[in-house]
Image 1 (cartoon, helix red, strand yellow):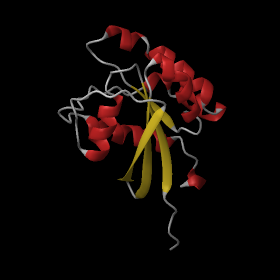
Image 2: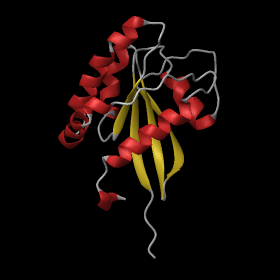
Image 3: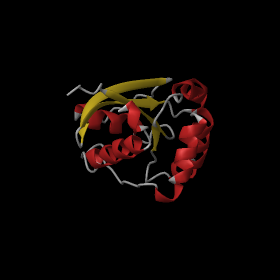
Image 4: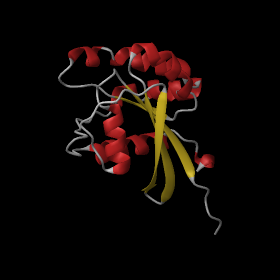
Length: 158
């Protein structure tokens, strides 16, 4: 039986500065949390090998700058993304209010096909309350992300 090539899923983490995007990514990939805050400039990414059902694939997780002065740098990294994760701080209402802006900017940058797939599933958007510090629900959130991104991939790519 011929082996399948390893699939790459590009995931973009979006949200305001200081909401915990970097911490969420580091907790999922490295199982580490730091109380020290360091703003992301432009974007950074980590990868993690994941097995889902009978498929092995690589999640390429992009952490984007949340500060307004760096946002124009970040949109270049949206292209080719399979999905996005919108992150907010439950203690900062403005970060929740700004999620729609992040979503709109993402949909402008991705392919029309992926934007339509998102719109088709619009009524069934998963929500996870996580804690990067405690590691609570982080794996479950990223497993759901991978599962939903895989659903939108054409079968011949797998």
